[in-house]
Image (cartoon, rainbow, N blue to C red; front, top):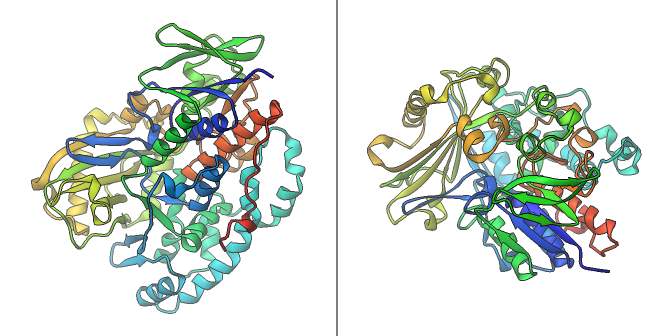
Length: 509
């Protein structure tokens, strides 16, 4: 059989993971990336001598990444230097702070220190959520191309554990009495761009895997992960082209047959893998096609995650008393999130996430300097907020918050390099539909079969990877989407490929 060819649109982590796996399996792979560098939302931001991650800043579910490299007959440690974080982060409430520890015994002690009498709730949380996690984890590794997928024994077995009708906040309220402690185990819904009061309860698996399995920093930044995928892909013969955007997917008889580049060149292929933001892809890559439920008008009726206001600051000083990661909660966190996700207005009571990577990784700034990454959740662009008018005042509000409630004092005097990305910038510069940085929302009616399928249902020979398809947003699930789509393509041509390692054989509890 002639060697089959695959074009990958977009060099984000999902597209490059697909390129790595497919190239290893003997496919002729070409990746086309519009930007001058690879990585997508997991790219590196360079400001003079300072280095930042554009998007994700830590890795959870490291075992999934290890299994992905194993599928390419590689070892993660040969390509990446990962360091477990302990403490994982500091939580800064309005009148108290708490270190979140990776060791359960240390975490129990910290809970008792800050919330006396609540430590036993951690034991109950870990024991109960371990069962849920083991039941739900295999569900994320399967495709959902047909409603019949709901009859698969894996999903049927998991049904009693998906917390139907309960939010993440509802689930965690069964373990802890203190409102702030409940927030300490539910703020992770923001990894999906959602409020814990709206996020489905099954996502208790996110705080569980953090506390049970830890989180990791990648030396040099998480941007090194797509770089590692690209290195393996090239070792296996894949071609990766940057500054080379795709104008449209070529179709013949309802099937993808290649792509037309922005230069006008046409590249024929047997299959096309789309790693572009899903909404952006639907509104740009299929001009003149009948997209039905994914037409621009239909897309606007769907639910989307919040956006983020980003600040990347190169500073000529260090902060010895600051942790690697810190989350500062609004005084009224629920009301803050209602502003972001419901009324879609800007609040004076802000929440913010800060990463100070030089506490562990000196590669991101010169000696005696810091590279501060600051993220504030804000409404997506359905809000109508004019960010050109608002961004200076919002920036100043964030800096004032940090100076008042964190170790980061007198920041303005030490800024040497600065970049701001607003929701409008995410949409216009990065190609994120509606500036919804965590993609399509993860409501019950937009998950599994109801999410865009890995084998795209509108056109044959077309596959999706990334946060806009199943299993959803977040690096681990994006990796899994790459594996699912790569396996579907391999199965189509009878190409042997390894199945995901069963959870029980991953060597973790």
